[in-house]
Length: 343
Image (cartoon, rainbow, N blue to C red; front, side, top):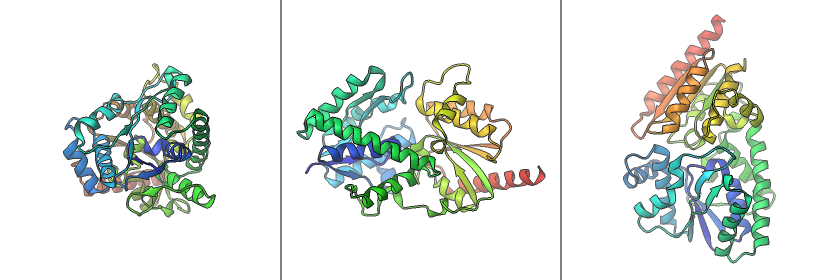
């Protein structure tokens, strides 16, 4: 049985259930790199170009970790667009080429192009090329992709029930193990998604804080300095864009004078505008990565639009200190608590 390695970075947090189900349906064994740690970050920083943003550098570290695991393939899709009239950061389009140029000992990449603007026929043709690597028929590829789409619906329903994406992935994995679906083989044996954060389910929070940012930053424990977990420990209920109704988010984003053409940027803006109008949201935090072009624009738009709800922009990079982040979070929570008392 051939093994396919999936780096635990970038769009892993958005599409892992689809990818895992698809490859399992083709007869492959899926191996996921371990939860981000300091060695992975340092490996990525040493390998990637200096101009890359922190999430891309961390992705490099996860790829190098999978290289050490001896997988047969590494899945590194060339992401262009995942919805009509919207696009992904241009850096993602060149990820496979950059990996081949900079990562020594790289196994063969499954670098199919995902561009829904070119139509379903183009996407299926790329999927059939992947199926050919595993000796699968077109029908088997179609069945595997349909199964993946069904699992994505389950995954989204878990997230919208109030779970951040990293928790939702873990709950999805547990559900599949209970139903007999082949579980993933984590590279470290520490479990998928870095362990559960059980405090979310029964949190009697006194504050409700909206957290915005790219999922591969917010849900990565090192990049975000465990932002969501720390807020929960401070007694806050956390609301993220994936917990909201997608149509409501789309409606709010459509109020901009000009359509936002970045998929994740549109989601951040729509979610921020929804949080601004929701009375139960006490404050909004936007997590941005230094060197990210979309973040510099989207963060500015959200900060200007969220004018009646306390707002804080947190910018992080590989040099950000944990103590400074914790201090700012504590000050922010203290400030909105005093604001509530005065109100």
